Length: 134
Image (tube, rainbow, N blue to C red; front, side, top):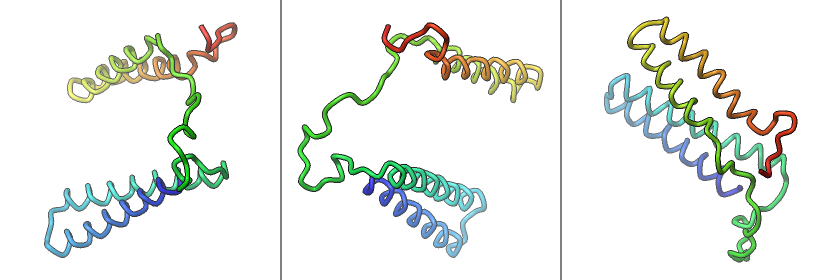
């Protein structure tokens, strides 16, 4: 993870440097805003990865210069193979987005459905009696 947060910190510095150059050249306000927001996003990711690395206090296989490919083998986590929740999340996000165009009443319906479907996706395996190993 050490390489990851350094990569994103360097990317943030690059974006901020490009923003300064863009301002000096006489760029438009939208371009300056986009470049600055890209730099801010890179800062957020760099901070998160740095904070996680500091908190876990471990060396990942990709951080070890003498590491082998086999050092990274093993279980990476549980990924649901049969979840239907992404479909209602996507549909309700589309309805909420269309609500911004058509009317606030449709946005309210889409936002309500989005909240319910995101909660369903996040809490899918937290129901009483449900196990992660089906």
